[in-house]
Image 1 (cartoon, rainbow over the protein chains, first blue to last red):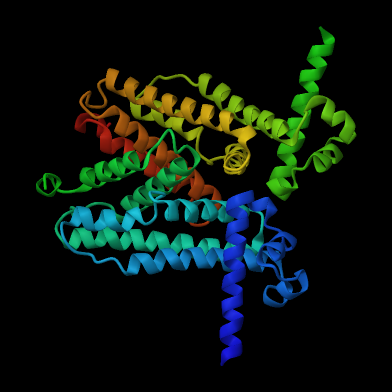
Image 2 (image 1 turned 180 degrees about the horizontal axis):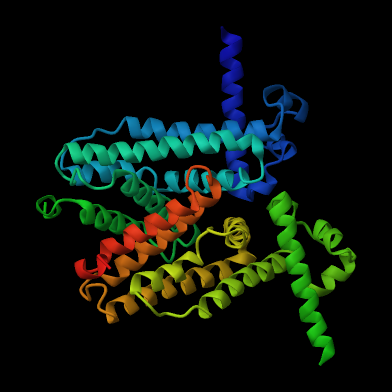
Length: 202
Length: 202
């Protein structure tokens, strides 16, 4: 099925061009016209792959989300619990050039999803996936005996998830006020605060 | 000085129209042309009050920030420490229609400030003001004997500030996933976690 493969390839290529346009010029500039220009194909051809700007943005958003998931699923959950959990959480924080770019685009997308109904189902889906991923991490810590099984898990999930996104937002918005090292230190501090005393000192 | 007063009045009126346009149609639609249409004045007259779109957006952003500060400075810091601090923090969270709207606009602005250099000084200024406000709240709690004076204050400030902004972001993005009551419950839970045991039970 070379045709279908080509179609998917083209869609990915267009999504990546969209990403470049957003990163360079901001989301307002990610119009069908500008994206066509960036890819070097005509507006007409682009419409063959994506019926609307909203559909195109949703696809690019999904691409970012899949990259993050792929990277996270490749990570081993091994070694000291604190380090294992931190490895996962760091994939959701703007600590490297790659994750910083992803998060800038992601923030632009989710923000746009406030007004663009076409983006809302995906925005909701990713929100829920991340929330359930963070909950699983906390459950793993309980199973490993690092965290008290009596902690209110829903509350700790909301708290950690909001902390991660708040740090990500501050790190993107004010990189000179909050460095990567400081972000990692806050995550470390927070995890230690919910760990058992014995585990904290490891 | 009726002329200066009128000038400031007009600027406020235009900033509020900008706000309405952003709320209704999204930030991309907040062009000088659309804002002029919303206010009922000509593009030429609008340029008399604001030389650029960036200047106009910065002014509207400042207006939001000043409203929040005014509301916060009118709040009494009295009664049980937990309730006093919660009252302040709730002004920074999308718990009412008014604060929800403010935060949506605010998020749109700060996001735009990633690309629009004209907005960056104000974005940085407000970030620092809020950070220092949150630090002062924690210091007040230490003075009141509610929080251990040995807590690493910088770390707790970053953590609480990121938590507030993460919850605000989630509350705006996914109001059906995270209600006002849940946001308040997480704040309450977090404050209790850093309070002395005796204060926690109040």
